[in-house]
Image 1 (cartoon, rainbow, N blue to C red):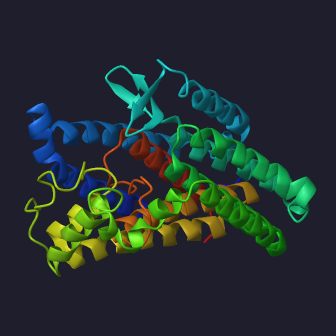
Image 2: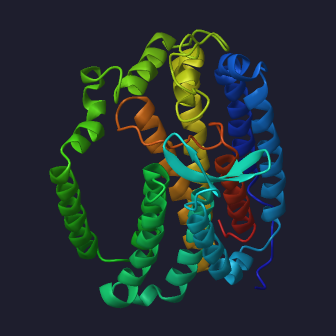
Length: 366
């Protein structure tokens, strides 16, 4: 590609580093009590998060200088590797079980989550397919069906772990990309009806499932079971008020909210920094998505546009689901908050994705 490179989107870099800094502070604040109790080291989780943050930032700046067309060349190999890892994680002795899901592969003292990296590999591969077959996307047989077959094959393998949250984000991201590529609304409506029918069938086969899914509507029906986390999250957010209890002053992190440094870190942030702190984080995410949309619109080719749309959609969907769960608007799904929640695979993947987005911005025409 002969398009001249310019400087990367500086505003996007600043927003990402601000979110990352807030995340490091909040991981320490949220995890200090639990880390002291379990490991006799209040910095246990914070140090590991800082390590992955450093690795992720280095990866982000490195990838920022790698032409994004490289990912198109290697997209097929990347997705094959991720499929192999998804198979490997299901093998006893290879995959590690945490919280009922076999989603991790141990690497020394650390672990990786293959399903997280499948999200980015799927974006790279699907963007390649859509850019090469965009004219066929209006055809169900030749365009839409092959795309969805690949996506739902990966989703099925992720559900074998099971990991509904990650699978949902991946499917939502891919559907957003396919929609932007020009797929027909009628096809989506038809598939939506099939999805509803399948969901009803699952509920009828095991009625307890609907109770689990709808427990967020009235978590006090089962306060020590399915509604426990939502109730404790609301107990954190409520007392936070406008300005919060103060950094480090959370009460819910004292063994009320389970592992508060992961999926429910936004609840601790809202408790300590209040409505103002929570709104600031939401504002930063909104600015990040705005910059990402500008990059997608200004990308010099279809592949760059589809990759940018995929990355922006992935981040937006995770933020909406995580905040929705924490505030009791959605069922608990186990989705991390990008850049803030504790988790090496998730953090590294997000920073790598921003690196790709920054490289596209170097060629974008605003």
